[in-house]
Amino acid sequence: MGISLTFDQYKNDQVLQILVQEQSGKRSYGFYVNDQNAAHIEDTTALVKAHEEEKDEVKKQEILQKLQAASVNRMYMGKFSDGPVGLAIRDKTGKTRISAGVDANDVPYIVGSTFMRSAEEEN
Image (cartoon, rainbow, N blue to C red; front, side, top):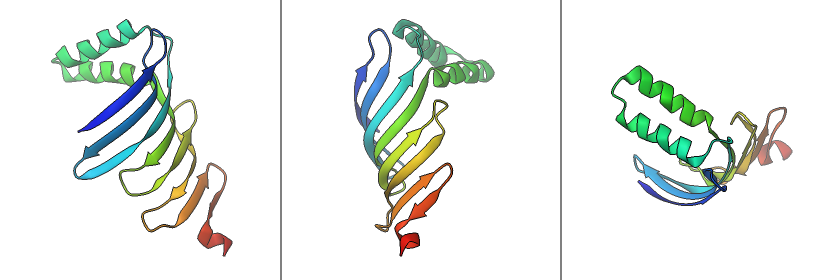
């Protein structure tokens, strides 16, 4: 359950999104920056419809993979569902490369591909 405010690229899908969601009693909210492929929004809409109507689970999974490949979240800033408030910056494949924030116990952290540092390590 949630609510979303999105900003679309011309003839494409969500490039900026503000999202609040709750699943299994855990709430997250934040600001997303997404990369979209060059597909026209009508092509994406047709894939969504095909996914909803497909009965064969294998074909349904193939359609879902196409949909997921069309959009990559590159940055998130907000509250994660497991407690921390922070920032995640991702590469073009969606893999988190830099993460910084304050965890559920109010301990600050910075994590990157080649380094890891927290306030506890500095003291």
